[in-house]
Structure formats: structure tokens, C-alpha cells
Length: 335
Image (cartoon, rainbow, N blue to C red):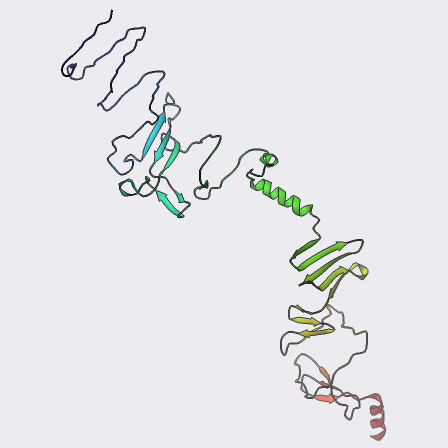
């Protein structure tokens, strides 16, 4: 049978001596305690031992009545008791100490949002153990109305860890990893058959229709050709211009040094000799050249008494004209 206590005027108060309890006992079958108004709990701790807790409010506020700017305890959130002493509790918390890079201003942000008494920027949410070790978070989708930024700390990188991930990349929106990029580059380069490298009308053209060759064009002008020559040696042809190799210039049929007063040397290694398999022309000089301290210098002038015009100067600066055989015979008869 129900019993009602009705107070028609004023408040109703139940008082017990200090450090005692008020128990609303619904019996062993577990009944219901129904409060039709608001419930205000002024103690420092509220313990709910229910197996199932249902709350109609769409927002649960923790750290209520915080007096500081930001969370004075640094973190606030939800903790999960994992039971016993072996496994540490875990938590999902807002952490005031987390700093991150603001993608719009490219500055480091830290602290609560809003400016003024709430601080200039954001902290961040963290999934950690009770002692602060960072834990994993599993989600099916990350969505944002703006760009999504990943900011690894220190020397960390953004990694995709899955065996055989390279073979799974097929959609245009799939994110490749380094293994996939390396593989695709190797496939493109190693197995490539690229006959031409160029930009606009400057290009390098490779052809091989039995006899391979490489052509060099600049501004649509063929400047060079490289192909296989006699005895299977490389054959390079240079057209319409000057070729500078180191300090040597090749221009049409002329080989010269690039620098003023520079020697041009033909050197045969070891015991070899420099051979000239044709006639050689030495143009006449108008001024006798200086000696060379490393050997004899030969030069041509208008023929004199020796009848040859072939002159020399040695390291002692002694000069003279090489005499012809006819003049030598004549001088021998005279003298």
C-alpha cells in the first residue's frame, strides 16, 4: 500500500546526525526511486553503481565551475577503469599542454580557444594511459571542412604499416607509401622506352633501326650526332658551332686553346710518340718567339741563308735556321 508525505507549505527536510547516511531502500527486488524535480548534489563525490546509466542530455559537462583560464589540472575528460592492479587505466582527455601548428598562420598554437580570459588558441584531445602514455585510436573516417594536417613530432614520420600495401593501391585517391613510389619509378625508368627527351624545340633524340644514334638539337638546329664508328668505337659529329672541352676549343677544322698564351699539348702516353700522317704547314711568324725552358721550339720564317725558313730556338736561347741539303752541299764545296 502506498503512503504519501505531503507538505503543503514550505520545504521538507530530513536531517541525520553528522557522518550518518540516508538510505532509500526499495527492497531486494530493486524498485525505483523517482525524483520529479531537479537533483542537486553538493558533496565532493558522487558514486553510481548502476550496471546501465542512461542520460537524456546531449552534452555532458566535466570540470564544471573551473575558476582558472583553461583547465587548471591541465587535463579533463573520461577515464576507463581496467580493473585489478595489472592493467593501467586509460583515458580520453582534453590536454591544455598539447601544442600544434596552426595551418592558417603557420604558428605554434597552445591553450584553449577564444582569446581573452580563455586563452588565444587550442590545446588538443589525447587518448592516453592514466600516466600519460599515448595510445592508439581506431576510426573508420577522418573528416574536416578544411584541409587535414598531420604533424609528427621530432624526427617522426607518417607511416602506413600493412604488409603488401603497395599492391592494394589502385584508386586515384589512395595514398601511396615510399615502397609504392620506389616501385613505380623503377618500373617506369627500367622498363621505359623513351626515344626523346626535350622541351619545346630543344631535344635529345635516340633512334635505333639497326644502327643506333643519338642526336642533339638546340632551337630545332641539329648540333651533334653520336653513333657507332669503325672498330665499334664511338663516333661524335659536331655541326654548326663551336665545342669547348675543358680549356680546348674545337671549331670546324681548328683546334685551339681557350686562354691567351696557353700551350696546346699533344701527348702520347708511355713510350708512344705523336705521329703526323700527312704534310704539315707551319705559318711564318713576324716576330721571333721566346724560348721554351722545357725543350726546342720550332717555327717558320721567310727563308734565309739556310734556304728552308725552318727555325729553332733552344733552352739556351740559341737560334738558327735549319739548313737544306743543297745549301749544306754548296757551303761544303765553298768552304
